[in-house]
Amino acid sequence: MLADFIETIVKIIVVVVVLLTGFAYMTWFERRVIARLQVRIGPNRVGPEGLLQPLADGVKLFFKEDIIPAEADKVLYLLAPVLAVVPSLLAAAVLPFGPDITLFGRTIHLYIADINIALLYFLGLGSLGVYSVVLAGWASNNKYALLGGLRASAQMISYELAMGLSVLSIVMLAGSFSLVDIVNAQAGGRWFVLMQPLAFIIFIITMLAETKRAPFDLPEAEQELVAGFHTEYSGMKFALFYMGEYIGMIVISGVAVSLFLGGWRGPFAEQIPLLGVLYFFLKVALFMFFFVWMRATLPRLRYDRLMQLGWKVLLPLSLANVVITALAVVARDTGFFGLLG
Image (cartoon, rainbow, N blue to C red; front, top):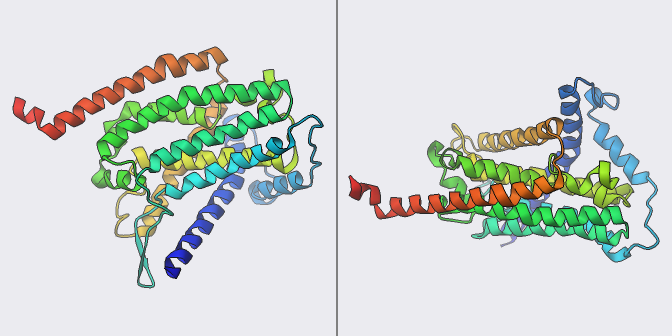
């Protein structure tokens, strides 16, 4: 029991450190990639190739003056940034980032927890993370921030429905809500992206909307809302919102990799476990590049078109995909095609 407890604590520490480091250097990566795409240089002064820029930004924000508006609801105002980070960290607990390994005579699973409702757990925490934006907008007592919070809540409701339905088609194919089981169901190169290309496209679009990334960054649209939900935040509380956003991007990319791209699976991954971990992180890195690429390429949507895309396009498509997948699974399990032959 003690050994299991120590193993779990070590895995939690490793995952948290990786996510926090990933958040810091994702800011550097995004600025450098966007600069290259726009024929600029990007951060290159602090450290070699600007690699110490995240540290400099952290020190700057730590010592920046921290202001709380006089008319703000102070409890909710302080709680909102915490709610931005904690759900993203908790969601990482169900990600399988490698095959089992054997160390010191013990079989170690490269995930923190394997629960049979892992996808429901992930979707629930994703919904909880949106509360941080809504509370930040309301507690700031700022009308621009409030509008940003309301946009976030409407956006979450609109796009989480389509995301849940796109995930449901994968659950029907794998027969489980567990991400570990879903990754195992893709053994032998049977990646679900090949069987469910429409669900993959819908999930990609909705993950951009759920993380409030361009072209779906309406809750913080600076042109019309100054800065949206975090207008009144400064210092480390401001940094926590971006920490939650970038950690959320990493985690949802890990979920997408596990659902559609075989997770950690790849050539010789079962024989060389560290190769499986490398495959997983390379696939996640591709999704992170995709996030940055979209931000540098696409303009922000108009709000009415954002809603129309969610309700009139993605939701009907995801419903149709679920029905077709259900019929295909029933036909497969009952041997319907064999009877026809």
